[in-house]
Amino acid sequence: MPRVTFLHPEGKSGEVPENLTLLEASQVLGFPLHHDCGGNASCTTCRVEVQVGSENLSEIDFDEQDLLDREALSEPWHRLGCQSRIHGDVIVRVPEQKWEPPTASGQQAAEQLAGQGDSKGCTVSLD
Ligand code: FES
Image (cartoon, rainbow, N blue to C red; front, top):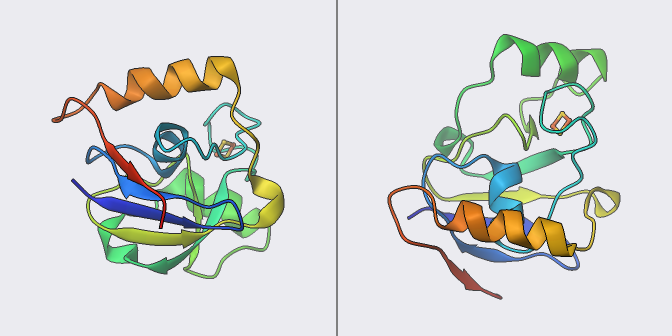
């Protein structure tokens, strides 16, 4: 399984099932990104900056690039967590205000997500 690392003062790193979005992975790891539009590529609150492994994320589609361009975030390291699917190891930096403490309902969603995919779950480690 791919290893995803969220760089942040409260950041986490762990293995998650392939093909989750970065937003879904953040929820699985207990480090939920903001997602004010519900993951519909219309708010940028889930934005991250890719440090390593951009080639291991899905390609940017038209809607994601259009929103990033409108927000003056056209540099290639900006990605929307809700649109970026994980296909290999990746390290992303999370702007400090983009993280929110997990809630009970968010934890349930994370547990459901952890049970999907090719694996029965995920491995979480704090590095
Ligand atoms: Fe709104 Fe990703 S959650 S753009």
